[in-house]
Image (cartoon, rainbow over all chains, first blue to last red; front, side, top):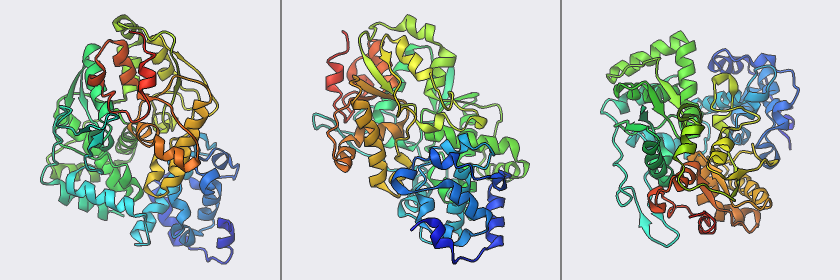
Length: 169
Length: 291
């Protein structure tokens, strides 16, 4: 079933559309004239059926709620081809990111890995933990054995300020 | 030339080969790096969760670079380079966002300096150090090698942000490889994405994207694939076996970072370039490197 089908019974939510526009820092998604250049070059089209032009249209019709709770907004590979190629500067990538942010605000289900990355940043400053690498000859290496400098830790003020930024809407 | 170095998470936590080779080759070309003392995420995974928080992290990188007293910062990761560029663009174009971010930076005793310039490994080597200096420094020309190039999405797009190379027909990495004596070739899938960002939510699709590209490159009978982004390196090198099993293909393509290739041409020892860390079958490539 396509995204448009699941929208056929949906109710428009103009306030939610306004929220998306505020999040776009002036990028004018109203300008989309459905030329589908974004979708024809989309990395996630073939495997995951992401159609950026549909997302543009649905947000423009204020059909935001179903979109924000749909898995489809998490299929973007962030390759940025749509931003580059859009003749109208409508930027589906930024619309998708705004929809993801809205989903998080509404505390709807978000892929776990993103929230895990955020909590790792909060804990250590980095979004990933240092790994040990096994070489092709089965030796185990880490930063220390490779004589790479130790990873520093963020200053004390970081956690409190980062938490504040996460509350920003 | 002296630059601050911001490595980002992926390089510091697993793509050690990229870090080692950058640290080896740049001093040989007259570049000194000063690491930022505090570890920090650029904001990339945070962008999907809260754009403002992500921009704050990006701005914070620039503020930490400012502490070194240097005006140039090297960001060797494509993704970090993009996220920090967007944060810089926001600071320069949105007065209200900038005031908010600067207030928060002040709480951390940090300040933003608009004069800081971002460099990626590719434009630092191509535009700043220059092909002629690299050519003069080459000790062992890589004659006879035929290589495929993968630029990675985020240093190319989107142009209005100011990127490292042309969005639709990038040439800098090709030229950098040719300068070492090797050949590069164009191929249809050249601008295809490695899929790494999808590892967060759709790992099988991400691996399928990476391995489909590898399969297409392998059919070209090249000696290897050259990358310059830790995320792409991770997908094509470390995840090559996993990707192969997802699409049911037999993949055996050597993948290495440009700085590793450059190091070989400069005559630097393989272990110093982290070549023992590559997970793809790099030995078949190394056997062809002229001594």
